[in-house]
Image 1: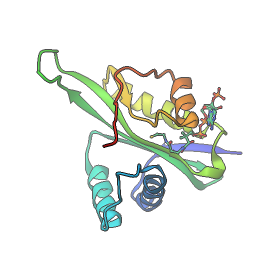
Image 2: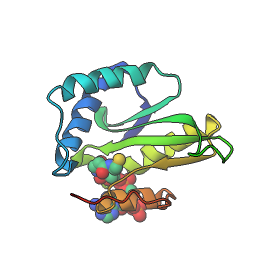
Image 3: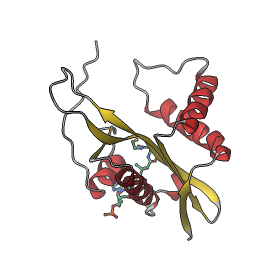
Length: 157
Ligand SMILES: CC(C)(COP(=O)(O)OP(=O)(O)OC[C@H]1O[C@@H](n2cnc3c(N)ncnc32)[C@H](O)[C@@H]1OP(=O)(O)O)[C@@H](O)C(=O)NCCC(=O)NCCS
């Protein structure tokens, strides 16, 4: 199996949009509903991110077929209140691997490539958010050296 990881191109926006929305449909909680214009909104948002210079995007292909993506950005982080010196960090907004290519190292490879790009962009750390109940994401991020720090807690009302 030939896994290839490359910087994203405009032709990737459509498969990324479909994969990400599909994930949102399955992962959303009962208090979250996709907007009616989710397709259009996602297309416009991705197109904007594609133009931004601080965006980090990679696509994985297996034997030439779209197998997954990672999307993030490099940003200067300021604390609230602003008492900690601003620092440059990488933020991973999404990591997704197409179901039949999972557990073959694709996700790990995408994280590795994004990590290197963020290091090259002078980020001093990387943060991401993942589902606390999903074994695949817990294991994948842990294997890549990530550990929970601040916890986002949630209570349904
Ligand atoms: C999370 C996700 C990206 C993992 O992708 P992947 O290509 O299967 O990951 P890898 O094959 O590189 O696996 C990385 C490590 O996690 C482990 N792992 C992956 N899936 C696992 C699972 N379901 N259960 C237990 N361990 C798992 C692998 O064994 C591997 O560990 P190893 O290096 O010790 O072998 C993929 O499952 C996915 O796209 N899920 C839906 C979207 C999502 O949850 N994204 C994360 C939040 S943004």
